[in-house]
Length: 608
Image (cartoon, rainbow, N blue to C red; front, side):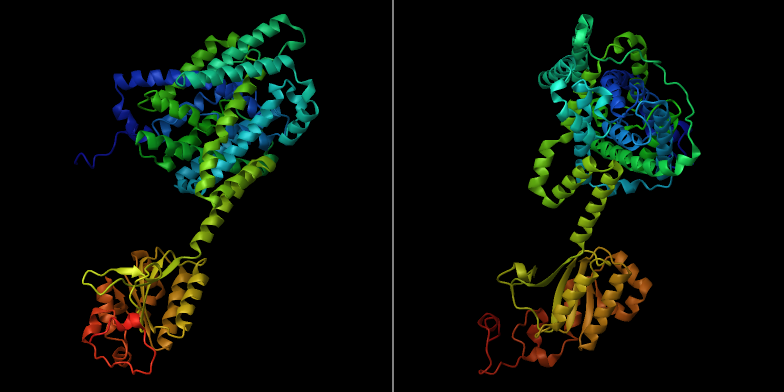
């Protein structure tokens, strides 16, 4: 057995080819990158769990076990999984109508949904359906993330202003409460939130490579400690002691009668998570040069959520806020994510008393900063300048994200993107072709785009087909072909340059059959130049090839014109003044009677 045919060892096949590259040097680099990842996720995990309506420790749990499983079984070497803002917000929006956020039933629902999402992701990867994520357009994702940013900021206002749970659950209720009670904002909470936000922004501006979120959280916590020591009306609410550093094993309990209702929510959350995961994996791969296997990536994400759901973790996926720093910090293999999870566990265990002092207004300040980064104003500005249709899709998705359920918003954005695509492809270009001169090196040109193009042959129309002829485009193509046949000076023969006709469906095959019958009924014929293999395959299946005749399909334009010229009416050729083909030079020519109207541009081409 040759080395190329020898099966891969079990470990590389199970975890990926990266295991072959592990060395003391990569372990050192991964350990340093993992330390940065643990520091980064500490404030994020707490903030995102709060956003999801869960106790803070669940955000940390989601950055430990799921992170390890996704790293070992996924495709990307640098993507770090864990809690994300979009998943957290989506989970809260879907579950808050079913149970009180933070309550025991709410936590059970979150864990069950996580396992369901993992099973769906695993099935998508196992059935090799990873390409469905490609149908979530960048514009829809931009609108969704921007709408999520608005919702994140709105929900953060509750703790930023010190109102707490009294402000309500929905975004509308929170805004209404904030406006009505703005004068009653808690001064201590506002102070802590502002200090957290200011410190994080300052560090981010002057020291971009420092953990600005962690430093901002530390600054806000110090102010809260000072305020709480004094007591009085300025005291702010803090996290309190976390129950455990290690994610406890727990089998989620659920009423089986609610499973059908949860399936729809789990599917929507799966789409949201998969869209994020593949987008982040592609973004990181563009920087690292690594090739991503979408199906394996989904398998890894599915396993991470299934296992995570039994270890008190809620829905996780690839995190851009941790993946990009992981790559830039020099991570070499997925072990960087494993080290990140292990170091986070040690960090939480050793600093439990300090974590208990973290104030909710400081977390809210970080969420406001996250929301601003998610809004991505420069990208909105650029999209408005480049493509108004995509801008409209993004705007509609953003409004839907804020106004209706999140899963419906992402579905709406995807549908709008597909409708836009179908509209653009429903009118494929059909360009009449001709020549630019009679010189030996003359080229085929688009007649409408070339002011000095030679006249077209009155018997043979040259038409370049650009685009697919499928059910949505059939009517447009049929109307255009009918216009060509119905013209007073219509050419009876048609040569379709089909190199750019990407594919056809059954409706497209029937269209060309109808065109063939119409051309032959008017005394002409239909020909094709270089149709694509998939087009020929469809024609073979439908029998159109036999009806057309294999001698009506040509490998190049010169050969096609030479063969078709012999089938033209010689009587019409004799009185033709265009004579744009090389074959026309040897054809008999009868001068046009003087009383007929002449075209000087055509007469200039005639032999003396």
